[in-house]
Amino acid sequence: MAGKGRRGLSIKARDNLAGYLFIAPSLIGFCVFTLFGVLFSIGISFTDWSLLRDFRDAHFVGIQNYVSMFTNKLDWMYLRASLRNNLYLLLVVPVTIFLAAIIAAIMNKAVFGRGAARAMYFMPYVTNIVAVATVWRALYHPSKGPINMMLHSLGVSMENLPGWLSSSQWALTAIAIVLVWKDIGYDILMYSGALQGINPEFYEAADIDGANGLTKFFRITLPLLSPTTFMLTILGIISSLQMWSFVQVIMPQQMGTSTMTLALYIYNSAFKNYRTGYAAALSWLLCLIVLVFTLVRWRTQKNYTVE
Figure 1 (cartoon, helix red, strand yellow):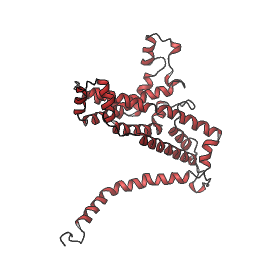
Figure 2 (cartoon, one colour; figure 1 turned 45 degrees about the vertical axis):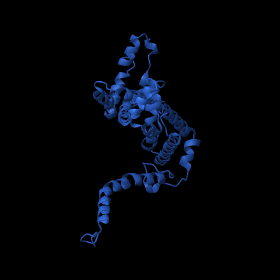
Figure 3 (tube, helix red, strand yellow; figure 1 turned 180 degrees about the horizontal axis):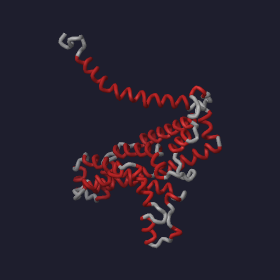
């Protein structure tokens, strides 16, 4: 037949086979490193397994790990503090997105050097977190840091200067400021690309109607950027809820629960307290929280129209 190859395979079958061969490495990697880990974590979340013991010595405990995180006094204290801190860090997401939208809209104009400005904003996002933490620890130094020195020069007494990373009262705020500075470049880059796709006729029609800059920004720009905003919101929520490495690096000496995040609590439970089964249960709680936030944001997403 005309559609057959010499070995009897049709052209469509050969194309499909080639496609399967191309995706096979990624599929195998996903199954080995992701799918297996997911299924394994489900299993061990119902056991009392510890990294200090052989897995064959683990005992099935049912939903005890899930119950313990809410009923055990110490477990609940750490979990509640972690969730509270994560909720505070979630405020970083709308602040970063709003500032990024404004900056991207300004740079979308014919501004001299906007390419260099975008690169400058994006640089912190791709910088190694160890380097970022080292620089900001120096900036946040309570007595010799440039930030407190500037505040002191403006009239703030030494006794009233923020302790930043050395104070449980200021530590989480200090981390939030760094996160806004670090992540805003990525959001600006995404918004800049989205702004290029907006039809300029919308703005021309608004000019004819006598709309000012703020009206055009809130009634045209932001609604048309809603798909990008939705994507950045989901990515920001997931990133905030899964944050532990940056907190661990910028604050190597943890101050109790003042900077404990849920992901860091999972890490400490698994690799410091060796409660691997309990840590697996916590990870599924984190997965559920991320899923809920994603569904809520998806359901509240509106199909904007420019009026």
